Image (cartoon, rainbow, N blue to C red):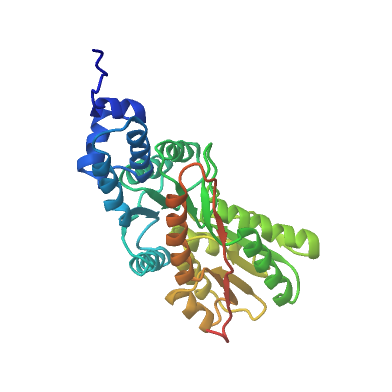
Length: 347
C-alpha cells in the first residue's frame, strides 16, 4: 500500500513561502502588534496557500491589531510657537479621528543639521507604520527617507515638498500661490514702487524657496518697478532675523517694504519696532500667533498669510491614515488647502 506524505507545513515552511524570517512569523503569531500590517497580510496569504495548520491563529493575530495605527510626526523646534501650535492641532486630530486607535508619536527636533534630521527620520521610521516630517531638502535627508520607504513605511512631507528616489506624499499650502499673493499685496499697498527686502528661513526649505519664486514671478509679470533685494536666510533664528532687518534698514533707507517668508519673525518685529514707523512702509509676514497678531494691531505688519492650523492638523492625520492603508505601492497623495489672510482690521 502506498502512503501519501501528510507532513504538515512548519513555521519554517511558512517563513520561506512568505519571504520572511522565522522570527517574523513567530512575531506575527505571538506579538502581531510589533509587525507591520502589510507583512502580516503577506504571511496570511502564504499560510492560506500552503495550508498552514495555524491559519486560524494567524487570522486572529492579523485582525487583533488592526485598530492600532502607529503614526509618527517630526516637527522642528518646539520653542517656535508655530510648531508648538501645529503639534497641538495634530495631537487633537489624532485623538478625535473617527474610529480612534491612533498611537501618535509626536517629536520635535532642536538640531536641524541634515545629519541629525536624517538620524531622527530613521529612528521614527523604525517605530511607526507611517511618518510625516518637516525637513530640509538635502541628499543626506533624501537618503534617510529612501531607507524608510524601502522598509515599507510611507513618508509624508509637511509644509514644504521633498524629493527622493521613492514616492513622498505632501500636505501643506500651495507655496507658489503664497508668494504670488504676498507680491500682489505689495503691488496694491505700496504707493511708490521701490526696494523690498526678503527674509527666508533657509534655502534648503523648499516651501520658502517656492514662496520666493512665486513672489518674484508676480513682479516680473505685473510690475517691474520694484527692486527685490537678495533674500537673507535667518536659519529660523530670531537673533539672526533682527540683525538682518537692522542691516537692511541701515543700508537701504529708501526700502519700501519687507517680506518675511521664513522663521525668526519675532526678531524682525523687534527690529522694526525699534525704528520710526513710516506710513508708506509695507510689511507682509507669515503665520498668525500672539506676537504677529500684536504686530498687526500696532501697525508693524500690514498683512499676514497663515496656515489654518486646525485644518492642517486634521489633514496631516487623515493623509497618514490614507498612506498607511493604501500600502507602499499606491503612489503619492498631494493635499493642498487654502491659506488665511489677516489685516489689522480683521483679527
